[in-house]
Image 1 (cartoon, helix red, strand yellow):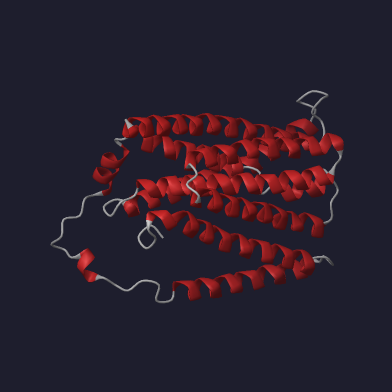
Image 2: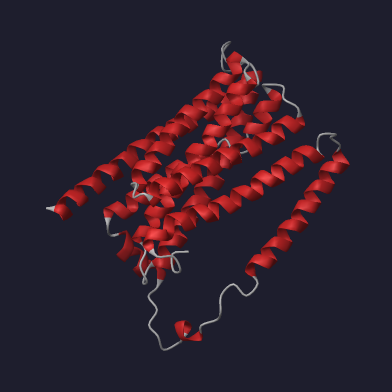
Length: 304
């Protein structure tokens, strides 16, 4: 996308890529909800097997003749800088490091609840299997709206860092809504929180990806986007694993009565994870606001 799309069209390209990802999640989650309405263990296994086969088929179709080989770019007599040298040259600029730090923190903040929303709805709010599966569609729908809003804003010349900051702020409010859904026993507040998590995450993801793409040129495009993908995937994976682990450990301690009378129910583990998420998003917001101020200072210097 960085190589093929001119800078003024990149926000639309990024939004389109994310939209297709969310369309797949949205359609599949609705399909899963319908197929699992009459839940059974065998039916669950069959649905998972079918999803795996469809995924393999779509990936083969997507990869088929995607890029023409270009041997001239990998000639042995061409000098190829090693990764460490290229990274040192790129990361020498402090603003580059700040972007990736904000990306990692924000991705972790939005991802920690990834595997907890559905069990939270079922275990704490007593939603059915079909109803909790639809939560994925709600989350994806919110993200889809976020992508559309991000593409519209950036297409009109909006600032990528301001967009990411707005997404982070929405995420803080969204996770707070999920936390309050338990004491209020409000499934609708929970659904609103899930939708807003998706919306905020969509704004943040597009804003940070377009910001990273703006750093790329012909020499370091692969490095920049590779580092962006590696940081996002690593932060999301670690956050998801930690979220599940923390929930299990805290729940075990609460059920054993080791956390005091205020934290004895199964919601204790979820609550701790959600509060950690809010903290991560607050730190992310501080980092992104710093990027906004730095960007404004550079713009003022350029104008002067």
